Amino acid sequence: MTIRMRLILALLPLFLSACAVQNSGVESKLYLLSSNSDSFQKPTDAPVIGLKPVTVAEYLENQGIAVLVDNSRLRIANYHYWAEAPETAITRVMHSDLNRLMQNHAVDNGQLGREADWVFNLDIHVDQFHGTDDGLAVFSGYWRLSDTEKVLLRKRFNLSAAIEEPGYAPLVSKLRQLLSELARMQADEVETLLEKRSSPQH
Image (cartoon, rainbow, N blue to C red):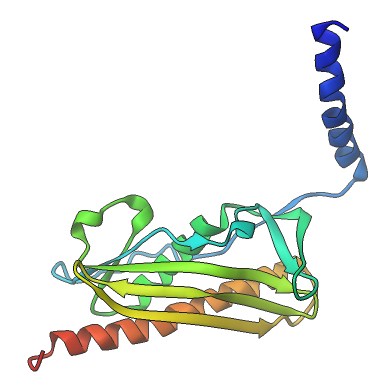
């Protein structure tokens, strides 16, 4: 068998698979986690909190949106995809929300690489970010605030909310709301802690 024939046979399954998708008539859809693009003016001397790039569980390193179908089995959508990598989208959204919510601190997006300005570091890891077959949006993981010397705050979060109607668009919308909920919790706890640290008795 010639090399050319071997190459044709090797590529044939890929070609047939592509044709099957094209002929199925199903349109792929992309979903974006929206964020506020407005700029927020902060005092020039505001301490900077650096939000490091969010890390995610391995199953989220997949463009297909995930749905938990039982206690241990996930279904990854074939035609419903994240418009960008989930870890990139979550970092962008959390940066936008936190920078808007925190009045006394500037929040820097670690994806832009300005670590020299950071006084504090905020790490977020996502364990779960998906829907469930029984109509829930689930968002869980842990986060940590540290300065240059030590960890100041360490928290787990486990958030969920009912999806009002079936479909991937309502799921994505609810997951976006859960991101905002986490940002509000973080902003309150971080600013309360840092205000105590900067008060005269400290």
